[in-house]
Length: 241
Ligand SMILES: Cc1cc2nc3c(=O)[nH]c(=O)nc-3n(C[C@H](O)[C@H](O)[C@H](O)COP(=O)(O)OP(=O)(O)OC[C@H]3O[C@@H](n4cnc5c(N)ncnc54)[C@H](O)[C@@H]3O)c2cc1C
Image (cartoon, rainbow, N blue to C red; front, side, top):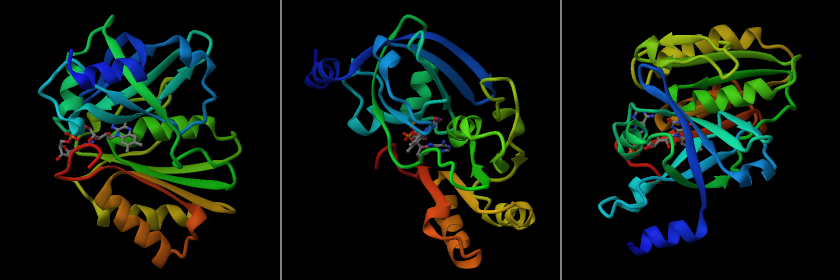
């Protein structure tokens, strides 16, 4: 056993894959069981640093530690469910295609700052396929009286999937990669419809995050606390780079 494998197995909790399901043309859900999950104090927006291929000596650290959001959690039976997109064709995308129920999986919890925030009256949520499960989790846990508008885009609509409860609360759009102008056109339509105090959540492609951050700050004069933003991947770069 290599040093990396030894360290992973010593310091990270071991969990079991219970189920893997192809839920769209380009995404798989994965249900993972672990006794420690029953005791996690969870806030919607938490994600996992998943260690893939701990036994594969040919993977580098960049390939092995990948962030995935928690789509659903069940404290009673001790499970978490994730959704993994395969657009990257990277190590994580390959891993999800190969993993099978009964396989072991190692991860650690990450809190971050891209969490639920109930302080606004209305929300605009924007992202791509990689961010959909994170946003579903936050949307599902917002109080019912909050107004939510959304812009979720992908190159083919059959890449998208419904939420864990079978609902489709977001609006999906077929757009090219990095569709800043198209998104801004939609934002111009939606922002005037938002009531009261407003907040925007943006995640996914780092180019879109950077451009929209500028747009909301400079053009729409949103304050820092009104913008929740998290780049999930960088074009041309691997995982945590
Ligand atoms: C907090 C956080 C939560 C996240 N949650 C999720 C989640 O729930 N589900 C999920 O699928 N992803 C999620 N991601 C994104 C995921 O960690 C990255 O997409 C990661 O790069 C995938 O690793 P990989 O080994 O498959 O591809 P890599 O080897 O990292 O990337 C290979 C190539 O593909 C490109 N690439 C990476 N991701 C994408 C993508 N999504 N679409 C198009 N091109 C891409 C890269 O720029 C690179 O050129 C999250 C990221 C963060 C930071």
